[in-house]
Length: 168
Image (cartoon, rainbow, N blue to C red; front, side, top):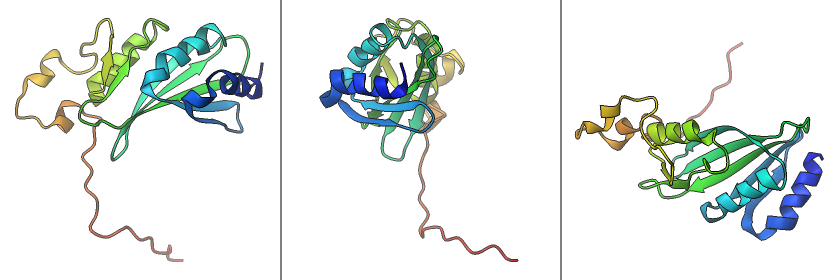
C-alpha cells in the first residue's frame, strides 16, 4: 500500500470522525482526531491497517492548549508514517486515554508526557514519575509550570517584534 491508499482507507472508515486528514509530499499522513475517537482510530490503524509500531509520543504546549502527537509506522517496507494529533483545550486538566493496551511501547512515552507536561493519561497501568524525582510534586510552593517543566508561562511582549534589515 501507499500513502494515497491509506488516506482513502481512513476517509472511507472515519471520514466524519476525523478533524483533519492531509498528506505531505514525503509519505507522511497527518490525522487529527478528538479524544473520544482516539482509541477506536488507533485500534483500526494497528489491527486493520497494519501500523504495528508506535514510534513516539510528543507533547506540545501552545499558548492556549496542549497537543499530543503520536508517530506510527509500519515494518513491512511501506514508507508511510502517520502523525496522529489530539488537541487538548483544557489546560488545567488535560487528559488523553492510554494506548498501552494497543502498543506496549506507549508506556514510557505516556509516563514522560505526564511527568513533564502534566497531561493525565487515563487508564495507564503505571503512571508515575519517569524522569523527575518521585518527590518532585511535594513542594507546595511550586507553580504548575515548575511542577511540569515543559509547560510554558507565556509572557507576550508589549509591542510585536519587528525585524530590521541586515546591514550590508
